[in-house]
Length: 205
Image (spheres, rainbow, N blue to C red):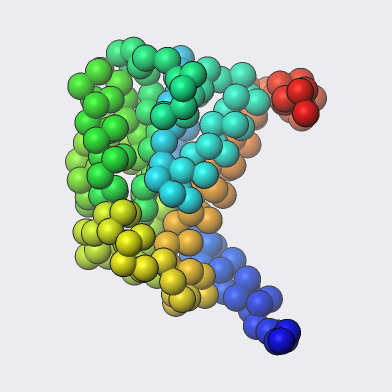
């Protein structure tokens, strides 16, 4: 049976308003430090668990289109990290075990860790050299020290939150918008436009 659900546009408006509020709360020093690190990086590695991993891959793809030497952690073609390389990890909670382990390993290898998160006081935030706090407007991560794996097993990614989005979704949405905004800023800094990017798109499909 098909049901009409007229509140979908309202949910979208509520989410857009949450994004505007979160954007207004961003720390310019944090975002600038992250931008400068990416702009000057010789090689960039990215990672994230679950849907945050999808955001990380999207960011890596755009960096590739801009001509950066970029790799996704865990892929078979990802080379060994060298001292001074940059690692960008997306984690709303900052507590995901696998991502925390990656971050510690990167530090031991002499790499530079950038954390995109909603939890500036977390295990991974204490490891990271560079943090961008996207905020936790819905309060989803506040006081929640459980890992991504535990939340998945206990079904905590269900229903809607106060921002009219499934739990955890606001971070992922903000992370995607933030990373795309970084790409736009990099395009300006590198003086590259659509034609240059188009020349690096896959041509095998």
